[in-house]
Image (cartoon, rainbow, N blue to C red; front, side, top):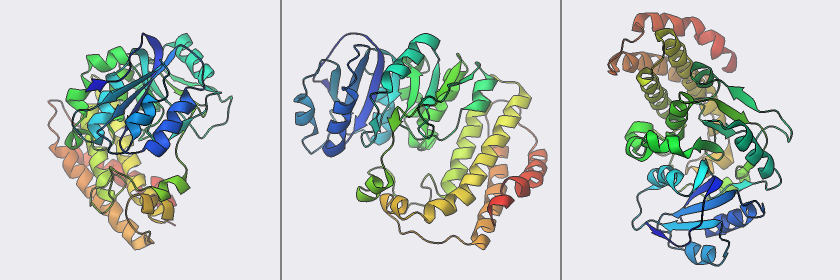
Length: 346
């Protein structure tokens, strides 16, 4: 990795992994730099782009901008994880190269970080300006309130020293381990180290559906059976999260509740959520597939398969700890199936 610019310490590093998106990453960088604070910096990690991304970024000339270039393309997942360790900020915040920020809200976000010193969190973009911060105590409270949420990647923030301590590149940059959600694993572990929070003002702004439709994803192709939003992808994610929960130093009952929550989340997303995605033309176009109607009968089949496979895979987990009895879990899931999913399949 080569460095094109370098600067001193800051409070917050905006970490932007990029590949061949000069048309969006350059305006994004300029947008962030509209905030005149010396407490911010931007690190752009270019993954061997073949367009003129580097030349245009070099022309900006702001000392708060650090541009890194990977010597070889290591893939999107590695670039997204590794960039979080770069730069001098006390905090790292992820920002995808196709998204944006509202520079008018950045001072409030910086003040929040400086005042409250959370270990981790994310910025919610659905709430209006002025919405209160949601705070969570270290440990189970934070895990129940915000961890494993599958939130949009832009807006996750982490205390960088903790990211180094938990060795994120070594542990969370392989797709077989984390799928498309590496930041959930990091966030859960940092929530065990200190208080966490959701900053509920729209400082981070994801790309529009029109923008997603116009430019296809470079990293996700829904033609693959295990694409993250497919039923199989959601099952794999729920199982990976459950395995990670069992690795955390938590009371058995807390682990059981968190695992059930992951089961319920995955079941909802693999049925009702999947139907919503497949009906959305812009999202389907972005992920290289055609929209279609998912029938009620298909949803019932998906739910049945998900239930069976989740219980089977949960039973086979080997994390060196006691697991909740699979029979008890099966009864639990059947009891709550109609209550949590049945209402949505109408």
